[in-house]
Length: 374
Image 1 (tube, helix red, strand yellow):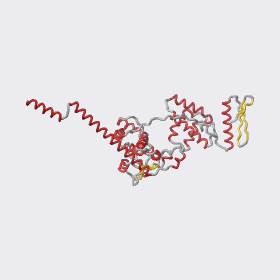
Image 2 (cartoon, rainbow, N blue to C red):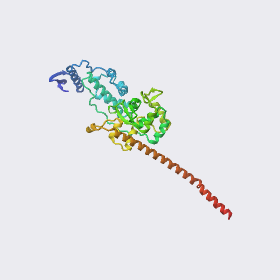
Image 3 (cartoon, helix red, strand yellow):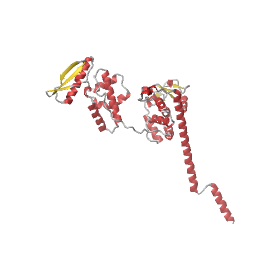
Image 4 (cartoon, one colour):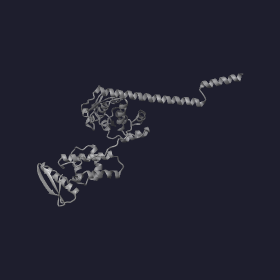
């Protein structure tokens, strides 16, 4: 961007492929002149690349419609567009920039109390659509390419305890119980569980292959089956089709059944996704290494350049599941011992309040009898 002040009016000077182009902006306002200069540069770049559908005057609503029709849209894009369209639908895409993004953030906060993380996801969707527009030749450049996002605060994630699990499973609907067990013993996401096919479960090797993941790292990962999950799946084994259904029909949502199970079990409010956090925390408690946990859950290998070459072998995964089962067994035994101790203390306190045991009653009776004889 190069602006030259000529007698109080700014001129735009742009050099493309060694050729200098000059145009008067017709304004003394520098901010307006910068916008005109940027548009002039985009037009020159479009002409150089022979972009036929270059159209910065297109409104965002039309751009969003083309993006959806392209087939590259994902479910989370549609969810974010519900928030973006009311604000940006009638704005020309060539006029959307950082200032609009800041105003959008303020407007969202004004409408409803939200976290910065939620609004960051909205702006990431907007930026993604603009990158698509650049690839399609609709825009010469993405004005939000280097948009700074607000720093996100980490929140405490609730974890389902073993005691809460024992109350939740009996309270869950019959079709939801195996889904909960799968989430707790594999760490799979809800969408991965509901999309799981029987063909992708290797019973002889006791392995489950995740083939419908939302992340590239989670696609086709292998998870060893725990004993209870192996027995559960073996009891309802089929040759093909979806593993988890309701009345032989595919399941798309389990929110109603999940909320009902939480209400009946009378445990604290939890999301189904918290089962995934519970799986991770239980592996940590069992002493499983971070790289193995990431491999089981389908997380990326991290930002370390050397982590690209880390490969988790199947025996390490099997050992992780074995440790998880041992930890759960120890927790269950601890809960049983604690319950027994409480009952024993209650029994002893009842004896002290009643004035002694049957033996003490007999001794008292004998003593009183002997005194009577004397």
